[in-house]
Length: 151
Image (cartoon, rainbow, N blue to C red; front, side, top):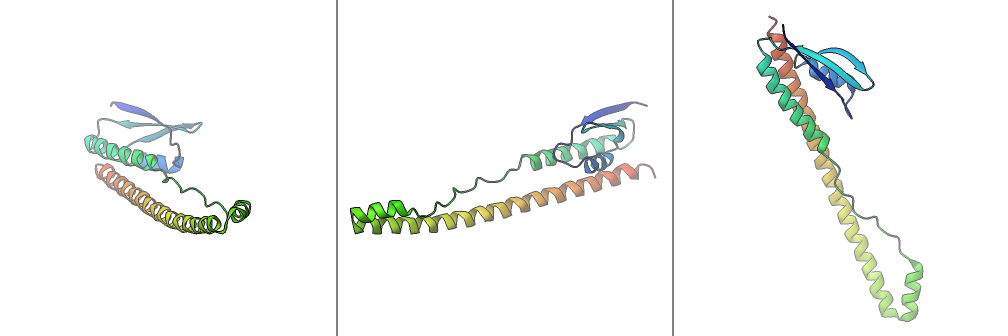
């Protein structure tokens, strides 16, 4: 009987969840040491090729999930500067009026940018949730394949 071994560093994933996922691909836990998980599996089982395919898909989905990041946030809105306003007012009413209009438009644009940012966050979170659901479905399919060989 031939076996293969693997050392897994779960990273941001929960170690328990990682072990549970890899057991679905036929891996058996050997030890846990300083955040690393050592596992092995039999390479002579009849469903070995199917498990390899499931595991490759799983790894691609995990990599995609880990590569997802938050979109860049818009710059923070700067409060109205009374000192600048006063200088502009002293220099003339028109420049002060122009400054006030520009600040109002800047605040309006910032509000729109913040709304777009929140929408992008919601979309990203939805995509991450979808990936988690696909990962869980893949794990369930692999687990079913792995345990079906025992019957």
